[in-house]
Figure 1 (tube, rainbow, N blue to C red):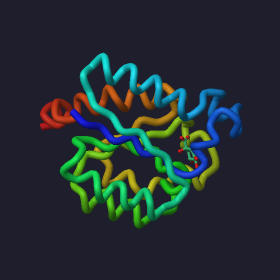
Figure 2 (figure 1 turned 45 degrees about the vertical axis):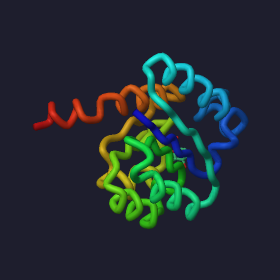
Figure 3 (figure 1 turned 135 degrees about the vertical axis):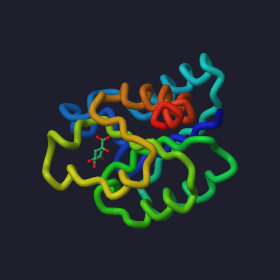
Figure 4 (figure 1 turned 60 degrees about the vertical axis):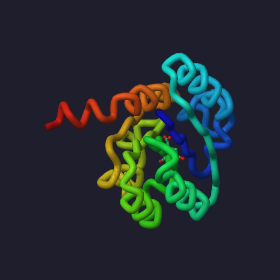
Length: 149
Ligand code: DQA
């Protein structure tokens, strides 16, 4: 199982950015946590961050054939990016949408996700543990589909 973790704009600032909302854990610390768990369950991961919409689009396009699942915290692009939505739809890969904060308990402009309709599922509001839950969800992507049918 190969899982690509993608992080959007400003997530490189985790740890210092609005800690009352996002906590004090840095992105490299989240990556270390995910790598440790992935090793235990025998999953291979790649973990990236970009502030550029086009770079995220390119990474999603390139994931086809190389990864089984994409875990995406698109950050602010979640609420604005038709380009990301189209890239997700184009790959056909299962993409799990992740957010650290509970976006539905925040400003109204964060309630709408343009990528949600083309994502496999969402994990929202569990703090940095959202990433761990997304890893667990990735391992069960096919199982969940069967349960649904
Ligand atoms: C976020 C929520 C987004 O609304 C926000 O723009 C972010 C982070 C989260 O993980 O809670 O940058 O995706």
